[in-house]
Image 1 (cartoon, each protein chain N blue to C red):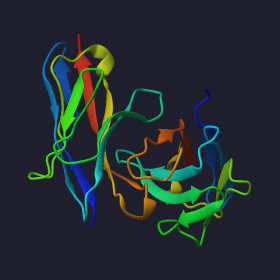
Image 2 (cartoon, rainbow over the protein chains, first blue to last red):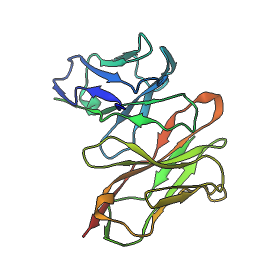
Image 3 (tube, chains in turn brown, green):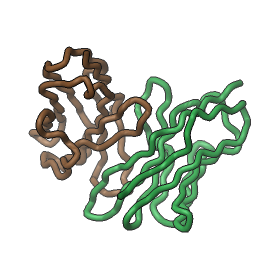
Length: 115
Length: 114
């Protein structure tokens, strides 16, 4: 069974440029998460989807970040414009449901460097 | 608020040594507790979990017991191997309203030397 797929794996951009990350969750997983991981820290949730609905986006900086999961399968996270402080690893995860004791399956992440 | 605190790393051990990585949490309600591991060059993966007080999670020789009285979920292994070198994250998830949100500690790097 294929795991969570993310692309690109690495991205280097200059500040003020836009950038987008793509995630394809495990087939059949209704819940999709985007996390931000700064160097030396644990991941922090940005947004959670149940199918195509964003049910928790309270930590998403909406002035510059946006996300979508149009058909309830793959998802895109966008930053426009990027700032130096956005340099981090962006992780996508999925789980069969959003229940608290469900295992979340993580992708390899996209490492963003903003110059 | 809800949070997880792990012991500072890196932890450096010789092969076959005993491992303890401390984890304590603060939470409203009754969380599920997890240990995730990140091997070099790989994504985070679940190592073990416990969903209620006094439960013991175990996997690959690692164990952790959900201690409500001390709000702790310490990770232990009796004899570590070089292949256990990784970053270990303690995390909690709260059960109300299908939140499913994981709150992570800062991670503890384990280095095992032959």
